[in-house]
Image 1 (cartoon, each protein chain N blue to C red):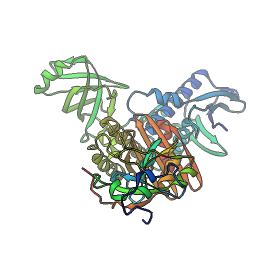
Image 2: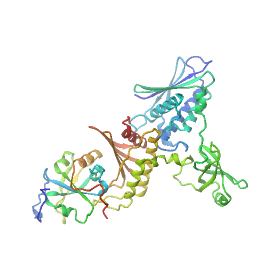
Image 3: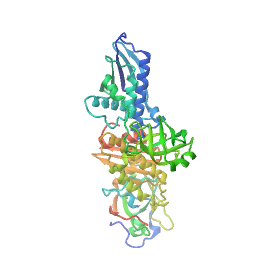
Image 4: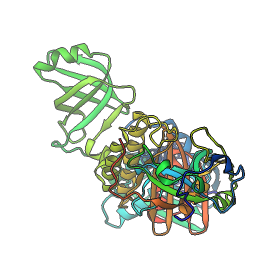
Length: 130
Length: 379
C-alpha cells in the first residue's frame, strides 16, 4: 500500500493525533481465516485492541518474528464510525503503536472484521505459526 | 400471545363441562411429563435419563379452566424468563401433537418423538379411554393450531414399549442395589428403570468390588425391553458427569456422525496446540474442557436436527481470544455466531439482512438459534 513508510521514520515526527484516513494494521492468526477468505470477528474483539499505524511502521516490521501470520488493515474513520476511540499509544520499541478502544459487541466486531481488508493475506491452506 | 393447549375429554356418562379428577390428574401429569421429556430431548439430552431440572423448569403449562360443552381442560403456556422466543412447552406441544397426527395417518413414529415420550402420553390417556371414549389435544399459538385425537387403538400404539435390538450395545449408568453371586447377576437402579446385568466369571471380582456403587455398564440387551443385559464389555465406576439411565450409543452419539460435527471436530483439534498469547496480542488458549464441552454441545445440537430430518449446517470454528470457542454459520442469508465462553455460557449474534440481534443465550435458545440458522424457523 502506498501510505507505508519506505524509509526509517523520525519517531518524534509521529503525530499524537490519529487522523481519520490513517490505516491501522493488525496481525491475523491463521485460525481466524474464514473459508470465504474473510476474517472472523474474533480477531477484533479486544476492548483495547492493539494496532500499528500503517503510515509510520512498515509491514515487514509489524510482521517481524510472526511468520505465518497475515496482516489486515482497518481505516481509522471506520473504527470511529462504530463508536471506537482510536488513540496513539507510543511505545519505546514501537512508536507507531495505537489502541482502538471501546466496547466491541459481537455486532461491532463483525462489522470491523467485514470492513478490514488484507495487506498480507493468509491463504486458506496457511500453516499455523510455530 | 401465550400459546394455549386444550385437552378435550369425550367420555360417556359425564355431564357437559365436567372432567373427573382422576382423569384430569392422569392427563395433566402425563401431558406435563411428555412435554418435559420432549424438551429434554430438544435440549440435546437423552430422553431415557432422569428428567433434568432444566427440562422441568421449561415446562410451564398451567390449567386455567374447564370449559362447558364437552369436558375440556384449558391450559396456557406461561413464559419462561429469560427466554424471549417461543416458549419451549409450546414448541414441544406442537411437536407432540404433529407427531401423533403423522403416526395416525399411517406414517412411522417420527424420530423426534422417542418411545419414552409416546409411552408417557399413552399412559396419561389410558385411564380415560374406553371403546367409545377419546381424548383430543389441540395447541394454538399466534393463530396457528395443531390437533390430534387419541382413541383406544392409538393409545395402544403410544404405549407400545420401546424395543431394543439385541445386536446393538447399550450403556447403563446407575447404582447396584442387588447382587447374586451364584447366578452372576447384579441389579441396577438406572432411573427411571431397573436393569439386571449378567456378568461373566472373569468379571466377578470387578462386580464384587463395585457393589452398591454407581457404575457404568456397556453390554447387550437380553430382551427387547432391555430388562436385562449380557455380554458385558465394560464395567467400571460411573463418572460424576455420567447420568443415570440407559442409552444407546448409536442414538446418543448420532450428532457425532454428521458432517457438521466431524468438520468442527477436525478444526478444534488444531486449536488444542494453541499456547498463551497465540494471537500475538495476549489471547488465552481455550482450555481442553471448553473445547470438549463446545464440541459435545455441537454434537447434541446436530443430533436434535437429525431427529427432525434437518441436515446440520457445518460451522466454522474459531477460538476466542478470551479462551472460548465460537461457531460461525452462514446459510441462505442468515448468519449466526455462537460463542461458548464457558460450559453453558453462550453469547450469540444473529444477522438476517439488515436485522441484527445479539445477547446471551440459554442452552434452549442456543439450540433454537441453530435451528433458525438451518431452517429459518422462528426462534
